Amino acid sequence: MSKPAEDFAEFTEAGFRLLLQKLKAGGYRFARYGENVDDLHVIWRHDVDYSMHRAAKLAAIEAEESVTAIYFVNPRCAFYNLLEPVITRLTARIQDLGHEIGLHFDAAAYGAKNWTLPELEGALARERAILELILDKPIRSVSWHNPDMSNLLAFDADLIGGLVSAYGATLRRDYVYGSDSNGYWRFQPMAEVIAAGHPRLHLLTHPEWWTPEAMPPSERIDRALTGRAQAGRRGYDTLLAKAGRLNVTG
Ligand SMILES: [Zn+2]
Image (tube, rainbow, N blue to C red):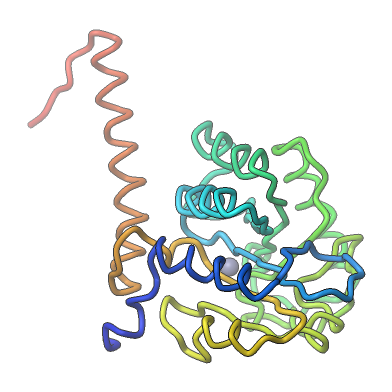
């Protein structure tokens, strides 16, 4: 399915920075989950589904703009490995820039399931422990990955398994929500959400959609996947060259 170019033209690093600047100009403070605050503020959430490299780039742009966000990472992701040294370094850099890391919980890893609360809490405790071990930092918050693929949306406690939920009832009731959806504006464009001036904003982006240049969302996924594949290829060639071994081709 193709979409008109203007639907994804704003999805660039410059476009991302512009949204941050609009929030700052509107007087918004960048808050974390679980803060009990009444002032004008925004909670900016990134769900990292495909690219930690993109996440680190956006984190750097945010730091340049002196704002902070929460990056939700998935320990079971098929597109990055949190234990891979390059990815570990990028995740640490995001934290060093002052951002928080949360758990992006992927229920699909457990197969098709109708969760009960004890099962869900058990799974969250395990995944939280894995993340805390890898990152050596406490994890305080959780967001669901593809929550409509199971019954996860039925769980709307503000705190679940000891983690602040990005799908908690209070957030959903008291905040105006904006999302970059699937790399085009499926609902209201984020600039319009920001311009409306609601005192409490909850904004969700997926770093892979925010590239240096605009391109259709499908090509952005190709960019992330081929970038990773090519880095693996270079790694193999470099290793052989360093070890003085033949790189035998057909
Ligand atoms: Zn996700």
